[in-house]
Every structure is written in C-alpha cells, then in structure tokens.
Image (tube, rainbow, N blue to C red; front, side):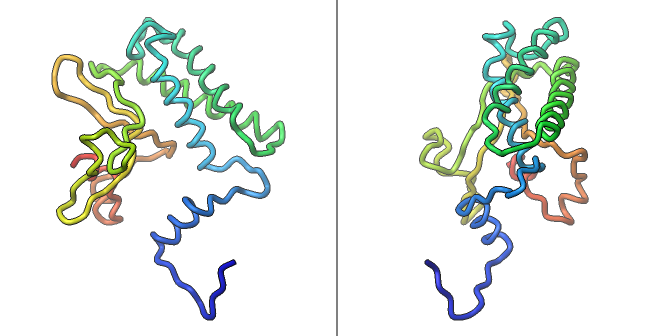
Length: 193
C-alpha cells in the first residue's frame, strides 16, 4: 500500500514509463487499440522474417516468391492473433484480423518490389542491457549518458558493410526532418548514431 500525505508529481517521461512498464495497464472494455494492433503486427513480422528462409526458401521476399510469402504471413498473423487475451466481440476480432492482414500483405508486396539488395539478418537487437550481445551491453554512448533499447530488424547487404535499421510502425505518416527537430522526435537521429 502506497500512502502519500500530499500530491505526488511525476514528469511526463517518468510517469509514462512507470505506468506502461510497471503498472502495465490493460483496457477494461476490450477494444482493440493502436498499441494492441502494433504489438500484433510486430509479432507477426518478427515470426515472418525469422522464418522466411525455411518456409519460403529465400532470405528476402522476391517477386517470384510473393505468393508463398503472403501465405506464410497469413500463418504468422494467425499465430500472433491466437495470443490475444482480450475478450473481443466477433466483429472486433474480425476487424482487427482483416485490417492487419490487409496491411501486412501490402507490406510483403512492398518488400517484394524493393530493389535494395539488403537481406533481413538480425531481429530484436537489444542494446544497453545485460541480455544484449557483449559488444552492445554498454548501450549507445551519448557523451556522458548511455541509452538502451531494441531494434526490430537490421537488414544487411551480403556483399558489403551496408545495412539499414528497420523499425516497424503502423502509423500512416513518417516525420519530416523539420518535425523531428521541432518536436524533438529522437528515434531516427538515435538510430543514425
């Protein structure tokens, strides 16, 4: 039991961290929200790219293997949806399932159309924690402070040292450079570091 004799104030960052990480609240009415949708998409994509070579016979989605990749993505999404513990109405469950399927299938088609020679190689790469790979345990040094986190996927060029960080987002719009600077959206600049 926590007792306070007066008002307790948290900064926005610490209270959001406290609520999301320690209290881990769930919705009472069981409505599928953006966070649930994003979590399901993330789970399906992780399973998809980790299992792609074995299930489809290719390390990346290619135009000639897109049908097999789409079928595998549907299986990955079904598996992710089985883990949903919220009590959803049949309509809510179908809306969530069909909306995610539509978006993830388009994602797979976009991957197949990409001309980049990059191959998904590393998944759920954590940095700045004891569970991170030894070379990443220190975290990202920001000159006096270190940052920890997790990268969804890293694609690498098999023939050079080039690569790209992939962060799964379900929003409809990316942020422009002025928005990143004005709104202090740090994720992209930190990934660049």
